[in-house]
Amino acid sequence: MLEKIVPAAAVAAEAFEDAPDEQPHPGEEHLITRAVDGRRREFMTTRRCARVALARLGVPAVPILTGPNREPLWPNGIVGSLTHCTGYRAAVVARATDLASIGIDAEPHAPLPPDVLRLVTSPAERDHLAELTTADPTVHWDRLLFSAKESIYKAWHPLTARWLGFDEAELTIDPTTQTFTARLLVTDPIPMNGRYLVERNLVVTAVSVPLDAEPLHR
Ligand SMILES: CC(C)(COP(=O)(O)OP(=O)(O)OC[C@H]1O[C@@H](n2cnc3c(N)ncnc32)[C@H](O)[C@@H]1OP(=O)(O)O)[C@@H](O)C(=O)NCCC(=O)NCCS
Image (tube, rainbow, N blue to C red):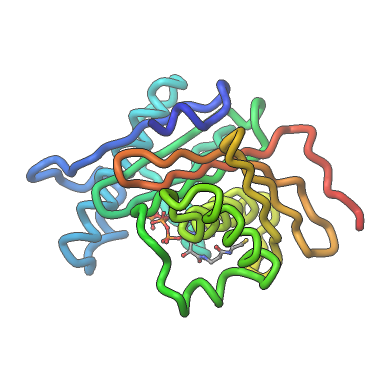
């Protein structure tokens, strides 16, 4: 389903369950030595998805290590993103000559706990969510907005090596096109636009940054 919302230049691979008895890929064992079983399985399945997607770009099955801010470290010339939640693991990759960055996120399609909602949205965004809910109460718009912000962060961080707080992006969701746009409230914002999908009891979001995206000087 992820391929429906990523640009044509990107390759997606996803899994809805883990493989029994999967072993860590050589060179990645040390990343999950002390991890609990659930974490080991999500890690191995998601990175297997990444290698499936990379193979479609002709990239060999290399270990995908983790950077100092937990970001996946892609082979030279590749941009990509990983996500996992209960019942879903996915990876997307693209050539760095086609996209500047990409971020994906998946969440269970369920309401956000109210205390989390207040932490991750502005009052204006909460008004926007109320309007969206009035128009279509079948979608958990709060969870969708949260996922969109996590996708934005995953696309933002590899470009900038900087933190971006939930209060530093103001989101607008357009249900007619199943897209969202973010106004970044930082000194050198980058245009961040994405697409979403609600399917199989999951909310999945994807943000891609084109090569020609320039910082917007406010
Ligand atoms: C990094 C973050 C977005 C990941 O969220 P999560 O709930 O763990 O989401 P997922 O399970 O879908 O994704 C986890 C994957 O994200 C990737 N990831 C983690 N940190 C990352 C970073 N700094 N940059 C890019 N990708 C990152 C990793 O591949 C990770 O999987 P792995 O540990 O198995 O390699 C979240 O933990 C976080 O720190 N959020 C705060 C920042 C934010 O979202 N700001 C909003 C700005 S509008």
